[in-house]
Image (cartoon, rainbow, N blue to C red; front, side, top):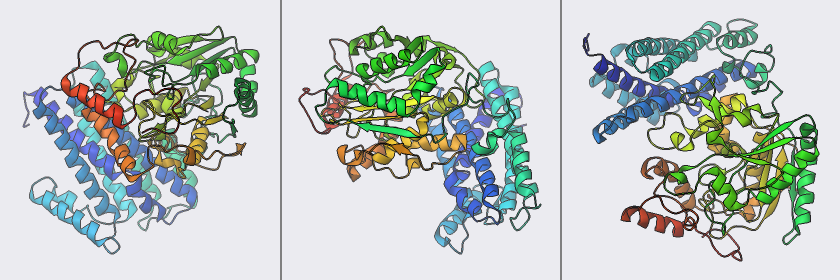
Length: 609
């Protein structure tokens, strides 16, 4: 009634409310907020796993919704509009913390937190932000009662999105909001199931409650149940196994093979160790039944021939392609995607950068993913509507990351290397994005996961706070890792780097949440490497850890879409497309020297400055 005759104003008001609401639940539903309550339920472990997976899946949905809506709102011009958007998101985050603390923290065991949350609830009531009926619900209560509250909240969200869909005149936005509306409807159903299957004292209502709970949640969506239960679904149900319908190895905990070379060893030694890795991990058997292979590599962040520490070795790629051909693969395609460097520097196409770094061989062909995209509808996620056709159609998919340290994920490994396989990378990184790059990677893994991973840890290896971008003084180590499960391979490398809990790496944590799996023991054939001693990494000191923590938001919001923070590119090969401002030039000069993002003579050894 307030916005009668003003549909545009009504739509903006509803979308701003949606952003705030999605941010509330993205914080309130987070795993850390509800894990303790689920663990304390008087039900068996399998039932707890079901409840936890359903809540985690709803949480990840809400995060996707918040990201999409924020990006849609940030497309409006003007600083004032952006201040309003970020203000709403901040208010939502604070409200989410208040809600989670009020509902899940017993005042007897957490008096200060509960007291602070209670004070904020009272403040919200006085300011008119919290209705009286909601204030009465925001207190420590049974889990079943908490689920009943969320039935009402999710139903109200679905009703609001129904109106947003009616008001939208942009077909793409209308489709996205309709997808969000359907998600909210499924969330309502899932919370209703939890209310039905639990008693007032948080026990299962029936003797067969665990099986019934799994059946009912799976009927809403197979994503609401853990991965091991999805495998029992009839063919054609649940998340797609992959594009070709073959059995996936991703998340299978298959054995990982590790081999290590001696300093100064000849090229023949590298070839021998590579063959041992590939044979031991079973690539030969996999290749025997494949006519085509897609090999995803990393060279587009390379910036100068004098520093190839963040570039997959062309020599290694040729050896791999030769191995695949000997085992029956007739067509080997090497895939890469353009990066943000091409926005500021010339000759940064995939073909030109591949030629610059020596990716040229009769054993394979180079494919530019940006020119290889075909329309594709993903079951989960937003914005992305394409996928690399070569990757999707390949009989065998192999990812070959270059081992290098990274500020947020500890190391840039298999999952990070797959970024950009469904669209432009820069559209998933900076402020205004409607989908984050890790979720885009998960969308790819839904339908076309790699069948094999080979980690190139052969010197030079980029070390230091921003090894992913380059290294002034790379480490001279010689390690190879291979396995049919890319997730397990990444876990093993992180463990050798000293990361005991792989969930500390955001991209792996996202995969565990997305697919409903947990990290577990992995068999490793071969001697383990002490990468923790050999590489300083991005977390070697409190200073570097602080830099790593800040790097993501700084790069996302303050880098001018990547123009400010770049390594010292070879300007003869990659000239600037236009003059940079004095501010940009000064920041580039400083960061290149402080963080070692510049080449050094090949004789240089050790780690990044």
